Amino acid sequence: MGFSINAGLLDAMVLSIVQRNDTYGYEITQYLRKAVDISESTLYPVLRRLQKGEMLETYDKEYMGRNRRYYKLTSQGETSLEEYREEWRNHKKKIDSILMDEGAEENEQA
Amino acid sequence: MNKLEFLTRLRNCLEKGGMNSDDINDALTYYEEVFLDAGFGKEEETAASMGSPEEVAVNILRESGIQISGPEAFAPQPPPAPAPMPQYQYQYPYQGVPVQQQKSGHWGLKIFLGVITFPIWLPILIVVVSVLFALIVAAFSIIFAFIATGIALTVGGIAALFEVPSVGLMLLGAGLILTGIVLLICKPVLNRVIPAMGRGIKGMCNWIGSLFRKGGKVNG
Image 1 (cartoon, chains in turn red, green):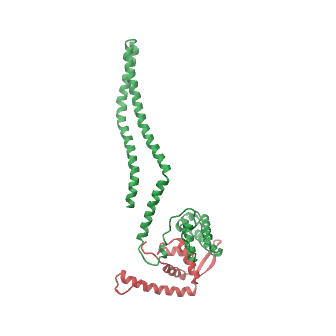
Image 2 (tube, chains in turn cyan, yellow; image 1 turned 120 degrees about the vertical axis):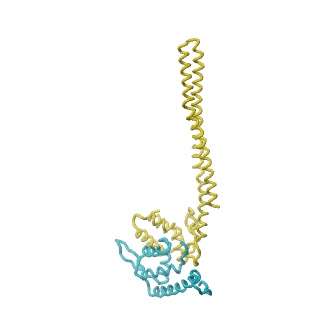
Image 3 (spheres, helix red, strand yellow; image 1 turned 60 degrees about the horizontal axis):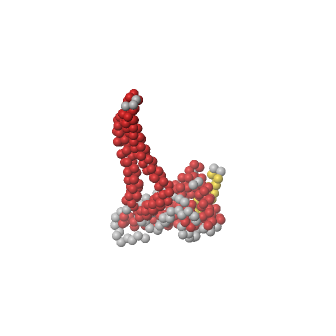
């Protein structure tokens, strides 16, 4: 509990998980659950959005007699992920400056 | 809800929302996979953790640019109004306030259920109170019967004593024995039983009353 996660942050985390290795929906959700409280149903719209934005692509792979849809990062996804990471670093620094009282009083939240 | 029911309801909602069939199939494939990956024996659990199919459908439709007022747009039975999904809020607010709202919703639901189920609990209440009351009356009647018989036998015995002394003595003795038994056994027992039943009825009334008072406190 505590702080909510916005859409952009969720996109970025999904991209980062897929970057490590190609994976499927259920596993991505389980991974995200280590950090945020989301249900299995939350992820699908996120994956759709990333697919439409051509940051992720999919392929099917056989698993125990059925197809499992795997997600793979595109080169555009790589670029976006780097941008997200940079943005997060800045964002985190600004939040910390206020919340952890690390100076820089002139900051405003982006 | 099992997998089949969840997926069927989801499909219906997406169709009503006017999504094209390719996108619907894509979504259903995904959710079916979630069920399969979660494990065979966990269908109910998985469905519960995903929320209602109507809510899921609203989020999918929104992502494809179709605006739906809410899950109630699909359902004949109104599901609880969906709180806006916290994951999609653009800021970082604390979660305290929405949780409170949910609580008051539960309270409203409680009153609603209380009123709705009134045809069930009122007769039960009446029956329980009536039975306790009947037991008290029955106990009184039995004592009364014993005492009346005792007195009648005693009086009858005295009367018979002058005509047939042996029968009179026997009746008189039986009457005195009976009266004695009533006084010895019934009185102390009833002294405890009758107040206990009275307390039972009173306690029941208090409990019913406290149901309503307690609810009020939680809400306030």
